[in-house]
Amino acid sequence: MAKEQTEVRELDEGSYVMMDETPCKITSYSTAKPGKHGSAKARIEGKGVFDSKKRSLSQPVDAKVWVPIIERKQGQVVNVDGDEIQVMDLETYETFVMVSPDEADLSPDDEIEFLEYEGQRKIV
Image (cartoon, rainbow, N blue to C red; front, side, top):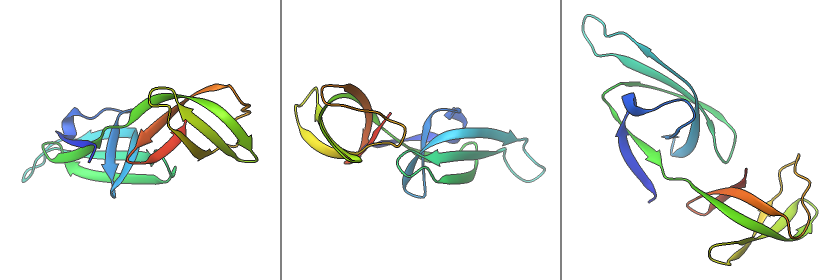
């Protein structure tokens, strides 16, 4: 698996964390002071990288959480067929089909940047 463990206190807004077994990008990070009987707590809000669902997590700041290792890669559009595009990875020359984002206006020979994590891919 392409993930590593880190402490909650080392996370920042804009970094990635696993929430509900899904890689999420942190949109909000806040901490509460330690109370009379416990340690400081962190509240993390994030948005799924591949499914765009909002999720939240509340943990002590010294707890360990999983951080996904998401690769940022370059690709070239080979073919466009409706909302599906065929992309070639410029490192491995592997071709695969991806769903085009709604706002993207892509044509063959365009170079794109995409995120990849455990077989899931998304155009940036």
